[in-house]
Image (tube, rainbow, N blue to C red):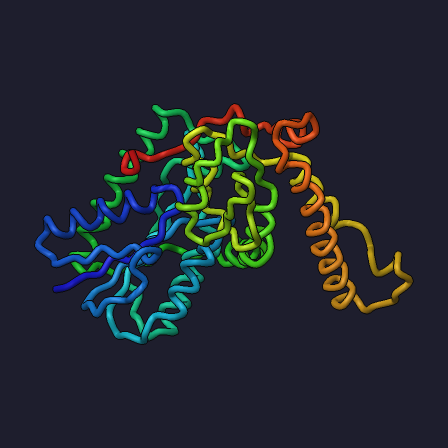
Length: 322
């Protein structure tokens, strides 16, 4: 029986899980195709399918949900594994991610037989420091063992769907929707390159969304950011930081009532949309002004803008990527 393992990986955790799963299925005697959708987007004809993806803010990455939407219809049985970021003693939370994946796959005619989660080390370095090396190895080893167990369930055709927390999943669906369509785009705009940046361009080359462009030898992020954390974790000089000033500005601009200040009396839905549009436009203007300062990294003001709490954070790279 042929099996295709589809995956997208930001920092390497999901890639580690996909490779471990593939090796175990092959050991059990299956013919397995391992498919990184970022590099090889063409779908494969297979009798069985497995989909693996990381969870960002309780939902699938936009790049992966878009991929599921463009898959051809198929009656093949499918399994879905969500990779979460965990800390020592604190597991991750899948939120709406598995529900979203199952819904999209069923729309394409697939029979989803197995859903589960995998707790790998947290790598959202733009906000919190990853766990230490020892904890990361422990979490990765434990996750790999769970992957092998799930591989045996997939091989046996076992039907196991993870229980649903209906209220929690729909609440997280709202958070995830806002993040997928707005938050992830703004996240890239909170990044800066500090004075350690040497313009090597690695961040631009490895970005899965082509959200980074080099201007004057420095990276600048556009609105296509996937929030995958690849650039901040894989920068050879650990020179990419989250700018507290940019982050606080992006939050602060959401609160003023722009429609009231302009003397407009709009109904609530229209007022919310109008205020959000004003906040986005204003932030883009401020972003352009800040960039004029940041692209002169030697100046005192540019150094001040690039100072960040993330400078002291350990960067995360799972065993596979090393």
